[in-house]
Image (cartoon, rainbow, N blue to C red; front, side):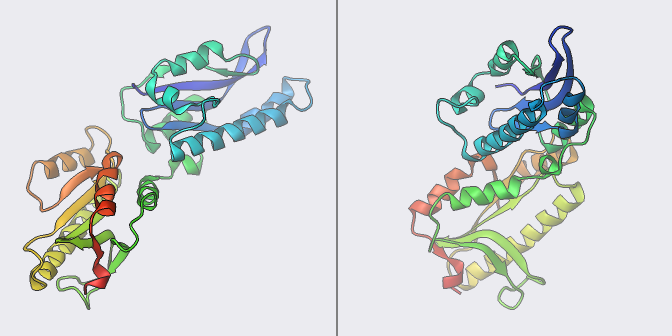
Length: 288
């Protein structure tokens, strides 16, 4: 499914087709992006004589935002939902359907394709361009790490691995400050998983990768000392950076080199979580 966006309007005069752009919605393969501007809904009082219309519109947009947020979190709804999972994420014509069949006060504009990868920054730029306002903070907030945590807690990893394990200098040779690793345990070989956000600034990203390299070297030393294996099984979970950005170039460089760790996109992280859940892993904290 190609990424499409649609401007959401309020019809202020059905006879003259006057309307105000109040919201924006974008459809991608795995997520719906949505934001609206309450101050523009407040303007409806100047154009409409219906006393409670502003209240009804405010509630409608608020509920829509909550509804879409829940859909993005759970990934599906019942078949009676306006945004049915199979429809939204499987049919590229759904944005056109909303445009053709929306009527009354709220109207979904004609959908437009966009070639770029949709992310928080791009959606905020579109909101600024088409609504003339800054996107709300919850839109700008990056959910990558929280998304990974939700996936972790969706499976039973109890007594399998340590979650958010603190690696300290007094226990690990080669570590000079406290470092946290998202998942760590052992099943024959020492296994560690870290989530690194590839939409961070290139400086922040470089520092985090350097810290990860120091950590994996220290874990390999521990593994050798314990006579477990010569090297561990290490994975970096990542999110896609913007195309042709310095972050993407760095990601491609890592992919082309032997780094001592694997890269796994967050959309595929269920594979490693199920592997841990279904096999005989032990938390590192029980072994040292």
